[in-house]
Image 1 (cartoon, helix red, strand yellow):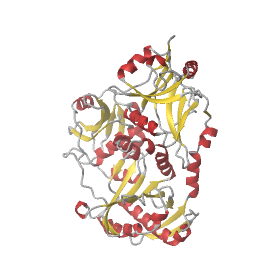
Image 2 (tube, one colour; image 1 turned 90 degrees about the vertical axis):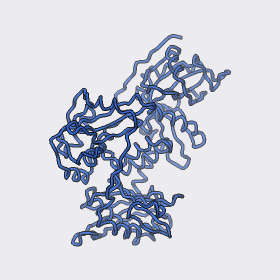
Image 3 (cartoon, helix red, strand yellow; image 1 turned 90 degrees about the horizontal axis):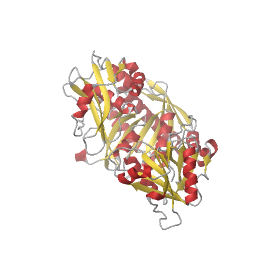
Image 4 (tube, rainbow, N blue to C red; image 1 turned 180 degrees about the horizontal axis):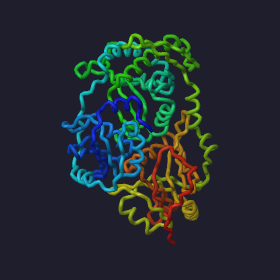
Length: 531
């Protein structure tokens, strides 16, 4: 993965100095909730170039986003934008990742097992850092009046009533840094009257967006800002949001009136390695303007062919003049792409999974309940000494309830099932796969360490409410969860098995929409005890 060409050019315009920066992340245990910090430090200037706190461990992508911030918009007021000659990290994986990313920026990446200054810095962090918003021009000044006029012209089209977020339009122009963009209309008929335009940089970026919509968003709590932010930041696109505001709340000169309502224009870009930024570089402002003009011309020429709610195959070549460079024009190809959506739908159907990846639908006994349980810390501590089969996993400290998916069946069937899981090397992970179609059915699967895929159950929107609540508990533990096998289905403890009735406990994790049966089998040590 690499930074966008426009971002690289922008960063290369920042002067490079012969300095060394230190970067990395740590868990901040002394804060009440589990909090992680990530930062880039400049020892020479004794400054924090950039810093961020979150509830999830910092990823290489997050450290890259912070590095871009450290170069362009350092948090320390005394620091000027600059590129370091060398950066030092204490994580090998991060070193290898950054080497490829910052190579075009002429920055050396070195590894040091221990970085005492970073350790000392994080030890003194006891409160959340505040982001100091920077005054950044959203658009180059010459584009502001042009955008106000052209965006209003686009917003007035009935294209918003005919297309939606699953009907993209493809724009191609060889002169752009991203020659192919996929335009997606966002929330054109939303109840809050806000809407927008997303321009995805290439087909892969568009597919990733659809995958998130279909496979991840349904399982993230709308109040779970951390997971929502991480999901959004995996997008790769430019965007224009049109937000209805009151005149007194308008804080920029980018706006237009539509049907007597005032709308603010919010431009920006998202990239997994750069993060989200609320402005366009000059070449991006030019590209997005030309894309908007191409969409307007395309729709005026073709809208009658969409009148019956169909999605025809169309391909138009348009000549779009540059708004600021009068001797320059662009050849833009605008096309519908019905085949892309159909192939994505095919990839998410149950038949695709069943025929390409065999799923064992009979691994779980027919007479069994699937229970979504939360185990208290003292119960989890007691279980390894009680069960016959135990797979040890990684569980975050300080949890209040450990989410365990419990399969309760008859005693003989429970013993056979637990033994079978042990023979398969334990559980590699659990996953949730949505099936396409109006029914909104999802499959809950377990992949064993022998690379076999077991169907645990299927859920529709009504029966899936307990699953969604359980997934929220799993998200709170960063994906950590367990699978337990118990008996007692016909007795007084039906649907409420005791700890002594649990035959096996397999500590694992939940990974959304993920199956990998191509890797070598990785059996885990299972602690087996005679009962």
